[in-house]
Length: 239
Image 1: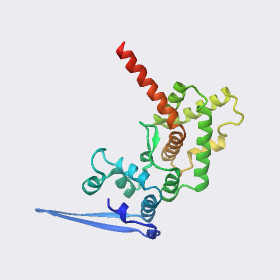
Image 2: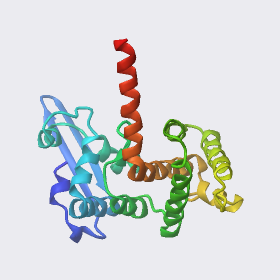
Image 3: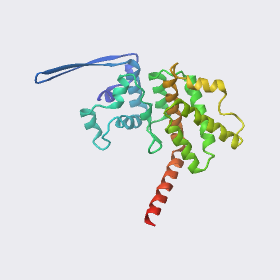
Image 4: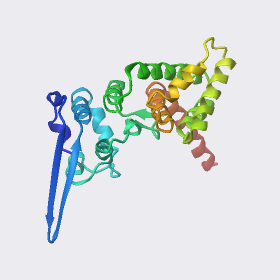
């Protein structure tokens, strides 16, 4: 885990293979860890551009959220690093759905998506634009309806649920007489396949990017609604 502190941008184009040998009593083990070049570049970039955000992302890789960060780095395996080394997405660690906030900057997210996930720059720009169209639509709703819309996207675990969300947003655009359609058929197809040919992987990446953008722009309002609901519950209990 100390790698995150020692890397710098001189690692560009380099990859590392680490051999970890343990010898406890009669049990001997050799673990081999391969750090691909894009992963090294990303960690170095994160430390130099948004170290605070990167630290938040890494911390979410431990179940223990209270212990000292440096102590955890020395003693505990981290899910964020594990996923990076295994080629798995860490997009879900860039935001916190409970507090409706982002953990890092869009700049860091953009670098990760382009360099590590390999998404084309134009595709990412398109997804960001679509996200902003969604936001300009749902923010016109009343607070409780807005929260339900966001929750619907958060809970989308199947492709059809993701598609239904877009249908609802399009109906809202008609309701509020927003001139331009949310998406054409071709644009929606591009959205679903923007991250490779495997739609089951691609649409989830797009969902995470949209949620990041929503939390980034609507955090204050979403948390205000959450706070008001808690006050109502407390008041009801007192009665």
